[in-house]
Image (cartoon, rainbow, N blue to C red):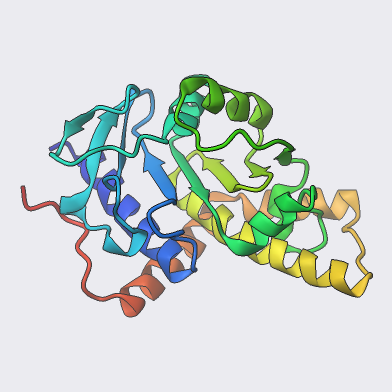
Length: 241
């Protein structure tokens, strides 16, 4: 196995464990995938597995027809959202779709994330609302609708469904997902009180640029990986077969 693939698998296992630790697993309904740049295949956990069960040996590789090409287990049949986004966004190498509570609640009430927290500035002018519900995404056409609405943004809230975050790396996507859920939770609390104040545009853009710096992303990623090891010390990031 090539080094790039080994590193992808290692980071993806960490991402699954971090998101499980953050309460974003969504049972068997959460989706996290990653691919090497330019590839028309992606890695994920098998259908029916939870995020906390992710180990290097359990991961499978699938093609854009959702057929398993590495491993023996079945690919999740609802990953058309991912394949449609990958086909349209060559820079995207990782996608997360989850049903975490705060982000789900914002979508249900037809709200998109507002720039009211410093960390939430990461999504300034970079998140949209998919204001319809098309049921379980079992066809490419339904994935296309979501991909088209997402456009070139970092994230999308899916009404009555959950959220979806994309990124140029596994670390970028994972950090974004934890920030989105935190910022959504704070926004709901502010809405309940009836009081909130948006960040000024200039300061929001400055904060967003800082949060996207590679050194900042790396520091945050390293912290999350250390925390995941303490939270669940038994998972493995190296394949044995």
